[in-house]
Amino acid sequence: MEKRLGIVGIVIEDLEKASSVNYILHEYSDIIVGRMGIPYRNRGVSVISLIVDGTTDEISALTGKLGKIKGVSVKSALTKK
Image (tube, rainbow, N blue to C red; front, top):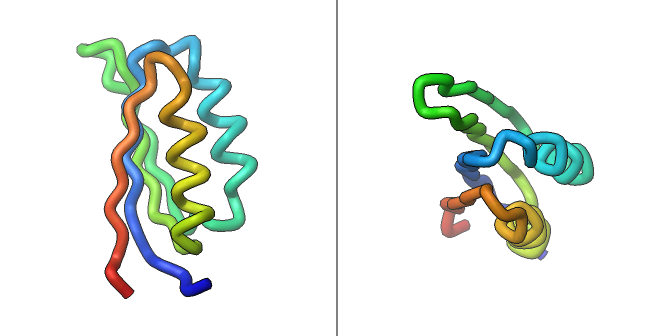
């Protein structure tokens, strides 16, 4: 399957779920090219942005697992080719 380059945005509203998010990110570390995390204390959330390079199945599995965590929002955008 063809690999795609993309971005994944994650907002953690329930900070107690941060360890669950990090566990999943570690599982998919082979497709993560870069990561930036910002704790936004004024709003009581953390924001993580990822650059990913993987198949659509791999990226969908990552975002699907993250999206199942209550208190975590995930959005992604992928290149067409």
